[in-house]
Image (cartoon, rainbow over the protein chains, first blue to last red):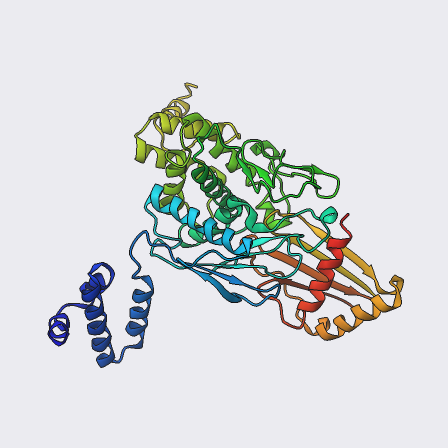
Amino acid sequence: MHTNHSIFCIIPPYMLREIVQNGSETQRVAALQALYSSEQMRGQRRVVKSIADIMAEAVPAGNKQRAIYNANNGSQLPGTLVRTEGSPPSMDPAVNEAYDGSGVTYDLFFNAYGRNSLDNNGMKIDSTVHYLKGYDNAFWDGNQIVYGDGDEDLPVANRLFNRFTIALDVIGHELTHGVTQFEANLAYWDQSGALNESMSDVFGSLAKQYQRNQSADQADWIIGEGLFTSNVNGVGIRSMKAPGTAYDDPVLGKDPQPAHMKDYVSTIDDNGGVHINSGIPNRAFYVTALELGGFAWEKAGRIWYKTLTDKLQERSTFQQACDLTFAAAGEIFGTNSLEQQAVRKGWDAVGISVSGATPSGCLTAVLNSFGLT
Amino acid sequence: MRIIYERSGGFMGLKSSLTIDLDELPLDQAEALRTLLGEANLISLSEDPPARSIPDGFQYSLTIESEEVKHTVFTSDVTMPASLRPLIDELSQLARMRRH
């Protein structure tokens, strides 16, 4: 070990970090020791902290790390650790659903897009179940997912919601909020917030389709199927195929989502209607995916993933999402490819037209400037 | 005294609200709520506008109103002071029971 040490001492820190991440087990240990002792000598706390980060991140690619906690109906997060990666199933279905669902979502992102966890760096995925009592919700708090039990504490006749882990697309939705946070970081209000929501519905739905091995035309495109009990008149929380039609119930009211830009809802509630107006980009994705056929995560999903990770920014609008998905499709599949045309059709269906430096757009602009159109 | 509870946001983006007039409640229920209100000491909490929401997080608005005072507090599950939690949980349960 000491010989290793002396060799590693002359290797620059950035290379040691490479070895820590990619070397064999023996090399990693030696490199870590070398890094640690050299940084200690220099007394740089900042760098020592970065070694801890490297150790946390030094999980082989494609190796999921999940942890499930139980809040025991309280509000303290994360709660009691109840299941870790590779440990046997629990007697508690919520624990297993959170574990399995985050596994499927991880697999979709890794196998379809080569993404290693939420931060693309092997981040451990933490989930807490049994949050509070009678809690009809699930959320992403910036670090982890939190699930409520719905109305499972009430008599069956009074229940509207089942536990929130019951629907795989809800799990995929929440995890995608984590991906978005590390990528475009779409601000959670108005159109950028509705895009944030839509990305979560897109990859949540794709996680479900991936697990069921369904093609675009076989999928139901419903978000949160199984979340409502039979006391509710509805098939789920949202419909990507037909926004506004998921439920119509005497207690919960009617699904408020618009399916077209002409019905865009201006409101101060719900951070400017982020869960309402997401119906518009949701349907644009659905139409694109149906147009392309096959497994939606392969082409449409890849275009949207590239847009989320390479193109969208914090305050992006629907129009920009339209133009950027169009650009992403051109980069991946070629200008004027069938894929790029499908993206244009998807947004046309919701009343948003591709603008900017497309060939036809340029030509139109030139013709316009000469008064020829 | 009146308590006005509103909850918005969440995975569904649905609004839920509840207005309670303590003078119209059975004495024991009113007393229980007064105790929780006392523990929460709402007046001592700032009336700052709601903070930026976390994805799918609920946002709560809580107002107490009487002839002498009107005070509104905005909060969320992850920013809520511990003193406020029992009151918000109780009101959330009451709102859930009344939705039918």
